[in-house]
Image (cartoon, rainbow, N blue to C red; front, top):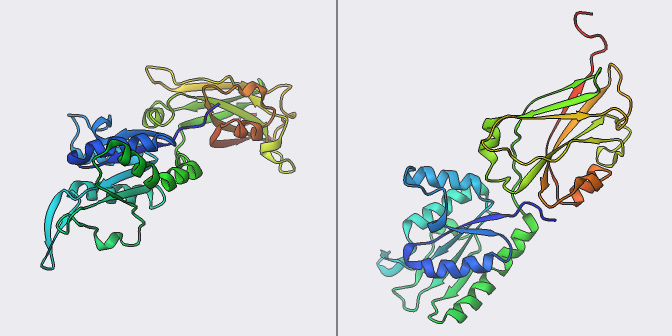
Length: 297
């Protein structure tokens, strides 16, 4: 049983790629990690800015390594600065994801000239430092220590909420006792990378304000379904007769769209609380009030 896995984008300069690989290995203890070099968003048909903007939407965290790559003179003193594109990418992710989901570490220089200057706008952000090391074992130890707090934060916050729903239509057929829900192809396309290896399930209940929805035992569930390829609209039909409380004109019926881990068997879940404990994630809920008098009658 597994929930959605957090995805981390790792950025660095080309010169620091070997160091980035070691830090990425440490972060993999808590998340799925992709180095900028391997990111599928960076395709030849995309501009670099398009790729970066897309990356900020598809990752849950950003992790950047500042290294003293460029020599500068600041207020008459020699020093070093991180590569400008790495600083820019850090800022881009920071604006998109927020300071709780974007991290950086900085390599200390071995000489005064290599002393790394951090932009003053970042002084309020904790940036762990590590020494320039030649031994792989020493660097692995330093990376493990520098990312410990970051890994704990990833464990604590998990993936960011999807904040999107593929639902484009729903309804309830009183005569047939059937709730319908349709997921749109375009919306599924936009979120397919975030829901890889997950399934959908629709849960239906009669709205009853005296019962906590998540603890209601009178629910009907659809079969779980993975994304169909090639992608197209997905239609769910959920039979409710004998499973939810009797529905009459004037009642409201609510459908809940759940994201279900591929290893999860929701047939054994008697409530939506139980589904959540299994690692399922609620994406949307939509309701339909049954007219007391159908139009045309």
